[in-house]
Image 1 (cartoon, rainbow, N blue to C red):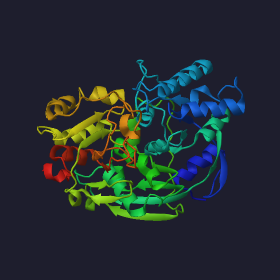
Image 2: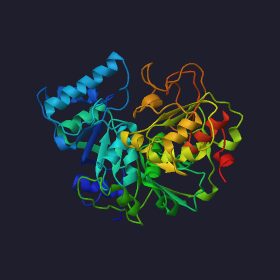
Image 3: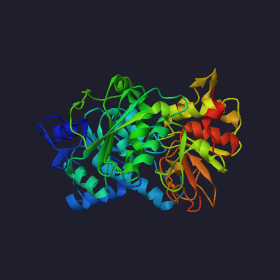
Image 4: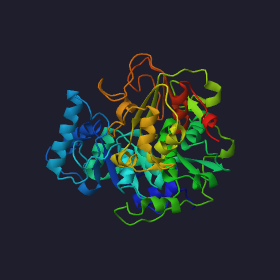
Length: 433
C-alpha cells in the first residue's frame, strides 16, 4: 500500500508496516518540546498522574526552551521559570536552555532546529501550536496540550489519529519580492483558517525545492493557521545541507510514495504570487499589499519564529539599506545565533546590524518571542492603545500583541521593511529593481 510521508513516519513510530487515514494508533515520541508558558502545566499533569517522584520516560528526549515571557519583572512569569528549573534539577535533564545563562537560545521553534534536534522521519510533539514548524525538515511535528504532553512525559507515547493529507504543489519561478510568508498567507487566504482542520498539509513541487530551509519553516509554521495537524516538506539536499554539523544522531530520509492517495491536491504557480498582508483579525484575511497602501501605520515589528530568522533579517535589510524608517520599527532576533549573526552577516560590505541602526530602527531586543504573544506589560514591543502594526509574526488575533485595540497586519519581512520606510502598507516592489 502506498503512503504519504506523514503516513510513513507515523507507521514507523507505531511499529506498523502501514497505516491509513483516520486510523487511531499509538506512536512513540522522538522529542517532547515545552517552554515556560506550558511547561509548568505539563509538569503538573505529569506529577499528578504518575506521582511526585516519577521520572520522565526518557530524559534525553525532553527538550525545555524558555522563550515566551522571560525578559520581564512579572512575578508569575518568573515563577514559571523557577518551576522549570526545579523540575530540571530533580529529573537531571540535560536539554534545558535556561534564560540568563550562556546556554540560553531563544525562540523554541527556531532553536530546536538550530540545535540539531529535528531530523527527517522523526516524531516531535510540543506544547505550542507552532511546533508544526519542524515539518520543514521532514519530521512529523505537531502541537499538543498540556494533558497529552504530561502523558508523553510519563510514557513516551501518544494516541494519534492519522490525518488525511492535503497536497500543495508549487511550481514556477518565485519572484525575488515574494517570500515564504506570502506563499502561506495566499494558501490560507484561499482555503480559510479551518480549511485544513486536522489535516497534514504537504508542500512540494519545484518552487518548494528551491526554497531555503528557513523559508520552508515559515510555511510549515503557519500550517496550523489553517487548522492543520502538521505541515511537512519532503527532505532533500537542502534539508541535509541545513542539518550538516547540527544533527546529533544519524539521519535517514523518509519520503512519501508519489502514487499515495491524498484527500486533495492544489496547484499553484508562484510566479503569479504577489507581496501580501493578512488583515485584522485573522491570518486568513488575505489582501495584496498594493491594494492596501491607504492603511497608515504606527509600528513595524520584525521578529518571531516566522520573521526572526537570519533569512528574514537579511531580506528586511535589503530594503532598509541606505533608507530610513518613518515609524517605530522593532527588531527581535529569534535566537542568540541570529542575534550574533546580525553583526557579521553583510550586504554590500555592511553588517546587518549597522544597516538597521543607520535606518533608525530600535536596537534589537534579546532573543525571545517578545510581543508575538503579547506578554506582560513590560514586554519589549508590546502594543498599547490603538497602534496600527505591520508585523512578521504569525497571528493577528485581537489582543495578540498586547492591546485589544491594536489592529495587526501580517506580512513578509520585505513588506514590513518597505512599510516601515513609508509609514503605510507598501509593496516591496516599490523599492526593488
